[in-house]
Image (cartoon, rainbow, N blue to C red; front, side):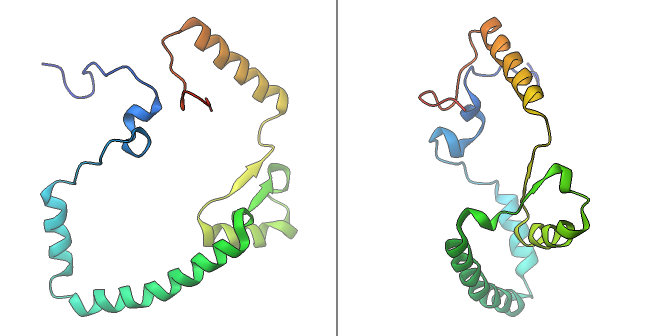
Length: 138
């Protein structure tokens, strides 16, 4: 019998390993997770309820800010400016708030095109490679 790590995998594209991409219903977590959650809450019910009641209004405010700001909510920075003092503080503050950022121009266009050519060559050498999504490969 093969171990899980060496077991033959079903052929597919990237969606085969993410239930959120493949349309399958997500399997519930094992019971031990519910039991652990209950152990954490037991004796702390009032504190948990208070934390939830505090969190909801803040989430509503954040949602409105995201709706109003749109994609610009995600901070962006050119790689060459990463150590520039005029941009560093604002970028760091916004990154801390959003937890995500876009860093542009990390690699040259020439290097990116070279990687793309390598990927195309790999696909040519491995025709079993499947695109995702099939109608609009990324």
